[in-house]
Image (cartoon, rainbow over all chains, first blue to last red; front, side, top):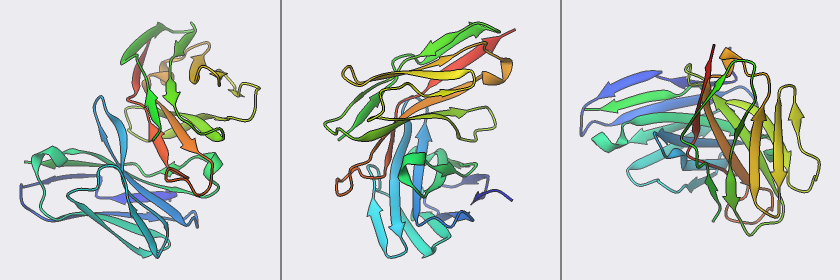
Length: 112
Length: 119
């Protein structure tokens, strides 16, 4: 099994719909992150959580919300999806910060 | 806030040759980590190499090595003996290692460089 599992792998949704992207990890790490990837922009941080009770906004949090249900689970919600939220979304986790992140395999989200 | 810039949107190289990908960053921090990640067509993010800013010696991992110039805030990746499997998007990333700072523990990425290795 993968260390970080994201579901779904791909999703097409309609404008205005609520959608949840789920992430779970088996690394036992406290820190979890959500990023989105857009062509020419790299990966940008949406939200991050350094433990279950600590959730923080990243640089592009507008239009998104998160829930940290347990140490291992961190979900991202789009309350009312819009087309410019079409992107590749990554969940990641980290332990000792100096060793970088372990990423999930990404969720390709298309909003039509 | 930190910024990371990769000025080469696309690069290409012949199999078995050497290629260097560029990365510059801007920070006022003195202690930090730098990373290169590889994203093949499978879209998985794979850590290639990491560098600790307080170490002067350049990191090496098999065919991958970096040229870390702290004063110039430059962190380039050299791939030797390029292989077809090296074809991927490569991201440079920065992480502040100073606890208490607003950017502590968060990765900041560059825009990415698409590398194509030709047979």
